[in-house]
Length: 494
Ligand SMILES: [Zn+2]
Image 1 (cartoon, protein in one colour):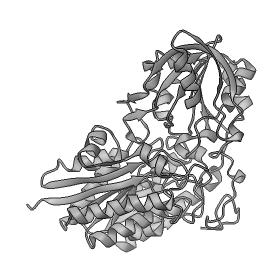
Image 2 (tube, helix red, strand yellow; image 1 turned 45 degrees about the vertical axis):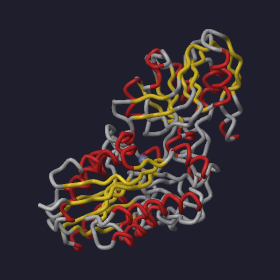
Image 3 (cartoon, protein in one colour; image 1 turned 90 degrees about the horizontal axis):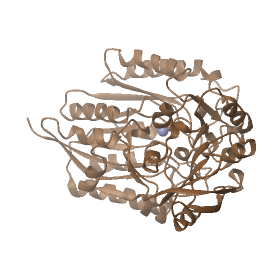
């Protein structure tokens, strides 16, 4: 058989359009774009989308050409200049290294640039124009706000089915398999998108419990239907103020558009039927800390919803730490992005006492800084790997120069110099910290910390804290989202 030659490329960016922190050239340089062998070395051993795509290159008569991939920590929009440069390079690499029999595209699905609110759709469209009529597969995050353009410009689109996202690798394998078969003329994918006029609160997106667990059972039924190649229910990302924000369903069939349309309608109806369960139900900071302090068994994991780094927040909120200190709730463990305090602690050195003002320096709603006196117990270069389950299957993390400081009540703040999502708890042992010995662990996220932090805790509480990822969507002013959209407009209809 002739070798089926596939291009691997993409960009992963989840844009919180309410965040003031745009992705400009300086931020892009921190994250960097990985190309060719560097891309393989960085992602090859992980459980990410890119790793799944790379694995397809080991199949018989399949060649996967790793072109370029950029992964951002969620933040605000990408500047027009940076977006143009990233996409321009992707297209140039496609032209220079082609022709290809198919394309494996890794996109988040909630990217926004200053110029293009539907940045993922824009990339898919430009890739289509560049490669012509060969199959294009898109593997996306479950938080994708799927646009008609993303679906029109690709042949197979599938998102993760888990949140926290522990099936990125498997979904990429699935998409790659369909693209290989399509390139060989063995299947003819046809896909239909149904946008549901509803947004589900970030706090109700955990896929192991209702309503999402029930919706995923409906999805499983669709996936088992003869003629269906793959299917998706995307949760959407409510902090992106774009027209396609909200939930959606995609069904891909083998050459059967009517079946795809009927099943997409069924999935949309199944989602719509559960809409009254999509609202937030978070504890207050004071209430959550008080109940953690009174719990018979710890640690209690407090999820700092308003400072959800995976959702584009600053990562330095001290609202929960301040509440723990105020209530004298007991030994508390928190990781805070605070390069200034990290530098002071590192300069003092291990074993020495420091007086710090930690966190709360970026968003006034998430401060003010907390006065914190303690002993520096460890320093580290902040680079760590996690071989256990993590959100998105990521393996390598870089928190920059890091220091741990312990107060007299046993509370420990881990101060980092780079912003890194709370996807992994693997940095604690490197700092000599046993998370299980604490009364409270604070993690900055909603579902994303659960894969790694969840097993450490006896109890998990989502807390409605202030910030650009607040659970209370009524705090945000939307200009571009479609209307009517439930729950903002209660009279929305399917
Ligand atoms: Zn996600």
